[in-house]
Image 1 (spheres, rainbow, N blue to C red):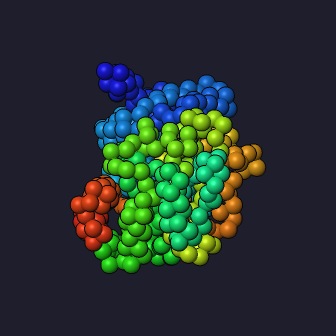
Image 2: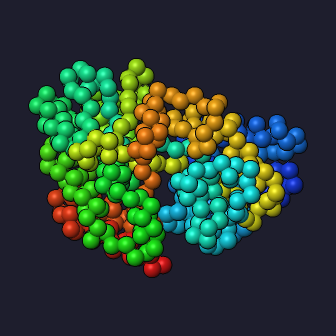
Amino acid sequence: MASAGLVLSACSSGSSSGSSNTITVMWQSNGDNSAIPAIAKGFEAANPGVKVEVKLLADADVHSLVNAQLPAGNGPDVFMTAGNIGTGSIEDFAKKGLIAPLDDATWADKLDAPTRAVGTAADGKLYGLSPTVGAVGAVYNTGALAAAGLTIPTTWDELLKFCRDAKAKGKTAFGLGLKEGWTTTLLPDALLATTITDPDKFNSRVTSGKYDFTSDPEMKSAFEKESQMKDAGCFNASPMGTSIDNDTLPATAKGTFLGTVTGAFHFGSLTQANPDGKFTLVPLPASNTAADNKVYLSYSLSMAVNARSKNLALSKKFADYFGTARSLNLLAKQYGLAPTIPNSEFVVPPSLSELVKLQKENRVSNITWYVGDNSFKGIQSGVSNLFLGKDDISALLKEIQTGYVADSTK
């Protein structure tokens, strides 16, 4: 009933305002929820007489409402949306003419290539700004590691030995929670960051619509390694029945699990569960050459502007303000990530120090390997069946390929 109330409230007052000095901003409720309201207040202070109405809703509600309201012409002026994957993505909205190009934004020329790619549609125009960036890799509880007398593995062979050594000490090397569904992509993400040796070439092949998951040895290698880790006892029992939020993260925070495979976006949950704990994110090794192992860049959802906004000029002015150092730093602090546009005002938290180091060493990978809802469903189904013993690697890749073909022929 509470959720329904939120949706009804948003339907009645979350749409684009006809007032010349009022805009609406719809965003996800996340963490302490302070960043977007603070950005709105800052924008109001910088523009006397302007009013920003903020609507904070659960991710699913934002997605549902924006998809319904934009085509009807009563959507929020500024809102959060996905990158270029599936229904309700920047690509989807751009094709339908529902979001405004932002190539003239004051921050547009400051974006690095990976960040620009997240907000760019197939027509080459920039439509969104992802405010923060983190990574997916192996996240360790360093205190638990020290107590177990173990060290972080840096090569593939060391990784398998680490799993065996942890098991011998009565510990689980990596907690894995696949119950939520979307988490089935995390382990492949972490491995593909290394097995895909030419990200730009790979991304081009995938986005062309002619890529074949079943015939790429680098793609197959990542899933073979996932299966080998499963067989080596790297994970907890019954990952499919384990929740990352309710089980894996709390257990990792307490040291029951020595680590997990997830993104920097979960540092907040870990430190909340164990304020005295120390955690680090590093590459999950997929190569026996330590320097070749990388982390998978992970971007937050993007800010976009309603092309049919009754206050388009003011909405785009808010988009300019959204990309300032103050705004990005507020979001980075809330999410526990780094701003996508670096600035001297941002203080890197200890949890991200390793990521900053990896970025300087060019040991980060920005790849896109699922291009729509069907691809994503294929991954979830294939990985789930792998852990349930219903699929082998060949069957898993065929499931992903089926979804990919469905997305590419839309």
